[in-house]
Amino acid sequence: MRYRTCALLMGLLVLPVLLFAQQGVDREELERQITRTVVFQNYQGPYERIDTIDAIRGIGVSLATGLRPGSEFVLANRYRIINAVDPDVLVGLDADIMVILPDARVDHINNVRRILAAYLERAYGYGSSQAAVLAEFVTIYNAIYRGDMAFFAGRYKQVVMQHLSATNAGISTVYRDWPGRTRMVVPLRGAGLVDPLALTDARVIEELRERDDMGLEPRREIIDLAEDSVQRDEERVAQREREVAEARREIAEERRAIEEERREAEQRQEPPEEAARQEAERAEREERVAQREREVDEDEERIEREQQDITERTERIRELRDEVAEDTRTVMERAPVAAVTQEVLFVQTALRDGRPVGRLVVIDSASAVVLRQSSLDRVTSRVIHRWGNEHLLIAEQNGVARLMRVDAQSLEAVVVSQAELFPESIVLPRPDRGEVFAVVRDGGAWHLGKFSGNLELIERSSVSVDPYTQMTVAGEFVFVQRPDGSISALSLDDVSLR
Image (cartoon, rainbow, N blue to C red):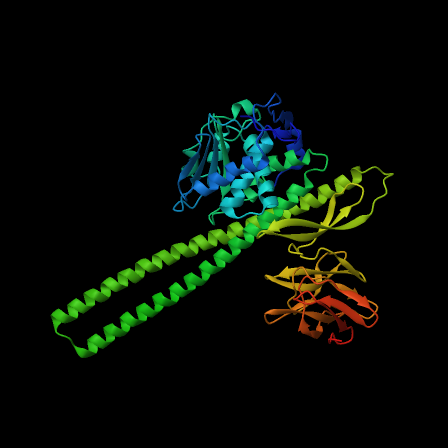
């Protein structure tokens, strides 16, 4: 069985000769070390059988479904997935290891990535676009460091290294070498998710920079994933800090209780044997408290290390964003001088929690390069309206859909409504009258809401409406659809029923 797709047959990988640290990289020196180009060689002959993309992705889904934490799972004697984790070891990375066994017939790097992406979606809950980006980075990372045991040993725990050798670590760039000789390492952090920053190794970034567009889009996406990872780490560390503080309080209370009991016993002047027995019990309690305190001390040391790690990761993300900004300017300078360019607003969508949401970006009309992007990544509006020097739209904030005015230059929200909107509501702006209409929640029903230019809800219809209703203005009325399918006319002044 051979797997065939319509994708390009070859993807370039640039391999520097030397290893470089993730931070403080001298880019000019790095570029001087690039001495040869490696090509992913994919099968190009006739196919005995053509499998659908869904069937290929199904391999990854099955691997994720069959795997149990801390174990491994073999699928049809063709693929194995190993969850190599050791929570007791604090230094180094855990990993998932995807093994292509001798009987596997996968022969195109795009299909390897499809299997891996489907696995990441099912195993870790990533969206399809996020998983695709991670899979691309994982294959590049593993091809660059193919067989480099010193590299892997310097970054991964022994629980990972025991599964690797110089003949199988990573992935070859030649498809014939994949079966039986491939163990792709997917770096995991302590929180149990893929570590995007581990995949932004300087050599991986330099490979992407060799593309015509300098790999700007996947680099932006991996940075977004890294920021999400750091935010989860911050939340986890904050929770552990609260737990340590509570443990300190309980330790102090137990010590006070022991001392109080000791004073009371001295006042009672118990018989010597009874006094000795009680004191022995208190001594045992004090030892348990001391042991608990030692454990809390160790927890605090771990928290301190994790906080330092978060600081370093945040700085690395800033460096990556600066590099992307610099390379964006480079790509723009490469554009033909004669080309007529302009900035175009675009909503870049992705599946999150099973439904499409978007991020506002500004692209160059000549090159389609993303020039700026918003931190708002859960835009639910399908149509973006202009409102003076701002954009008017609906986006989710803390899980609730809000009406927002977004600055056209920074792409950040400047005004946010308090009312909850239907995420996919039609937005009807009337800038000449300084008002906006949209569907808002009122208890368990949806109603037509009238907002001021500052997005304050000033009127709400007395009758409920279908949340997907169209809104058509005619004369002094706006026509809407009711939940039962009927059409009603509401006053533009106070959204009352005609």
